[in-house]
Amino acid sequence: MPDIAANIISLKKQIPPSVKLVAVSKTKPVTDILEAYRTGHRIFGENRVQEILAKKDKLPGDIEWHLIGHLQTNKVKLILPFISMIHSVDSFKLLKAIDHEAKKINRIVDCLLQFHIAEEETKFGFVKSEAVEMLESEEFIRLGSVRICGVMGMATYTDEISQVRKEFRTLSGYYKELKEKYFGQDPFFREISIGMSGDFRIAIEEGSTIVRIGSIIFGNRK
Image (cartoon, rainbow, N blue to C red; front, side, top):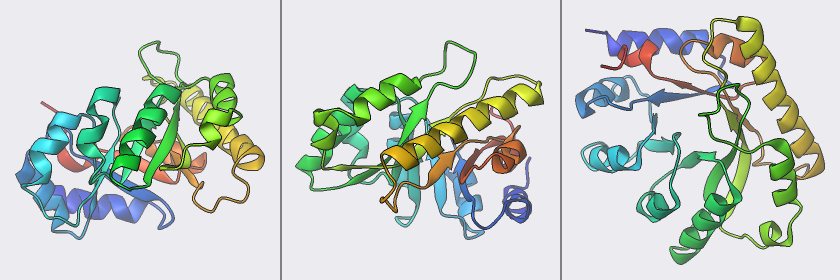
């Protein structure tokens, strides 16, 4: 059995204070999340809407929930009343759905634009030209209930460190371009969400401000 409290305390010593740690608790029971919570950690990430809904009411109300997995438009309204950040906005259609539902409950929802930076076709996300087209559209300018806080990406699942570094660097480059061209005066646009258990150190070297780590804390998923 992993020593969750010791793991999270050790991990935080390895991460600069400027980098936010999202403890990825997908597939893990509420008891494991509570163990991490008792160390003082408050930010947890889940991949699936149904799982986050099943857990949240059994846990303390001051947890900051991040949705890091693919989000279907028909599930958006279920998480908007409480979600702190949606990392995985991978299409304009999804962003518009979030804005539409957020307006109904008078909320501004923090979102990251997910870019496709990996070689695998299975990863979701914008290509840069799609994001630029969206950001320059009248329709985007009219959105009032979403706040774009930065970018997110997942590297190719590979042992080739040079490739992972190159993909993270690509996303950091996208972030800088978008910041300069579209979000220069926006203090909220400041996040680069890259780096998981196997590659968080490389991610931090390449500019990550948010790392999403599960197995180092909770042990491997069953």
